[in-house]
Picture 1 (tube, protein in one colour):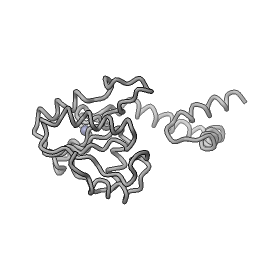
Picture 2: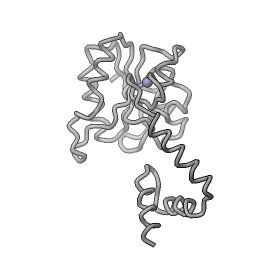
Picture 3: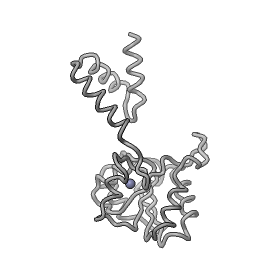
Length: 195
Ligand SMILES: [Zn+2]
């Protein structure tokens, strides 16, 4: 059925959704009641309308600064640099890290045609220049692109931050912060080394 396949291919675009799961979502839509569907539409519209990137760290936010940036209990002079909001959330789940974040919005990737221009590097430099930073923890993924990006950030900030560290991964290359279990990720953060 054409309409059904169209909906399935829409769901397939969502991160982490495979063909079976996309089909289950489409079946749900086909069978759901009117009120379930209007709830879903309303919730999606609200997210689209209200959720904006935090002007400081680029985490999702529904106001000015995000919950993490506006939490004065958090360590203000430590910034953990991550590729995506999903990685930020994975680190938050460990409950180990109490500093602030900076979401890059990707990594250097020649395949994707990125020259680094779309990454929030300028904003990161501005942040570090504006208020003194004790430690920058680079938590890009252990991929070739993640490592290149980490090294580049190091050269950019070397003179500006007291300490730059890189989170320690059990495996040399490959893997994704987003898919690591909480304990492994906590150990990676704990075992971070000077970079
Ligand atoms: Zn923020």
